[in-house]
Image 1: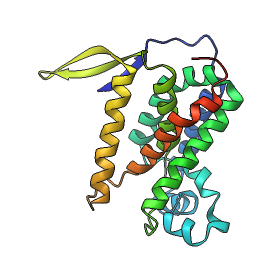
Image 2: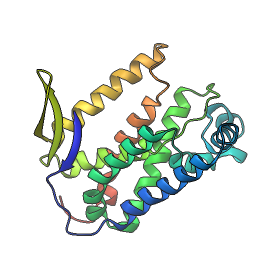
Image 3: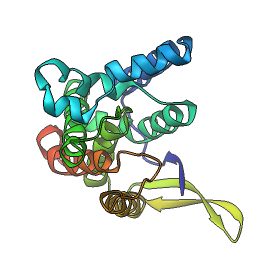
Image 4: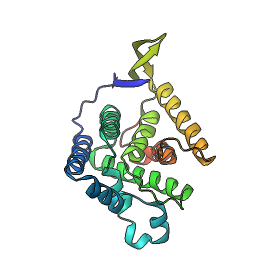
Length: 217
């Protein structure tokens, strides 16, 4: 299932959500200007390396934040920003811009914390906004479970657009992350994706949304 848009329209312009998308795009543009050696060094310096964070948190804590704005390629950033654009606007409208920005950062921290805890010996940099965005998805599930997500779905080798309730779409997504995370814990190398960062961000978003949403839902 590939999400195309949410049928739930926001009455407020999502200024922080677009600010986050633009900031990620600017950082990625900077990455494109670096050569291969420079990019590898940049990712290693500003990505979150679990082993370094656990062994020397005083000097590496900032990477918990900087890693949220780094991406490893076109598909990585486009997929993340597409999801953020679809789901973030309504969550921001429900929370308010300031609360949403804080919620986004805390979701990223929760995501990084769980992934670091479960892979403390890993010396590979962890990058990407997907952990923070997973928090937005968790909040969306609680706030708008009956919203419908227009998705591109293959049926008998033919792609069809179907409106899927958010509770089903996001529930399926979360179960797939749990399954992949479980496989990763068993030693499977599944494209080196930080699955538990997705899980940590999502669960945080589900439970923390009540403290950040400013309106009754």
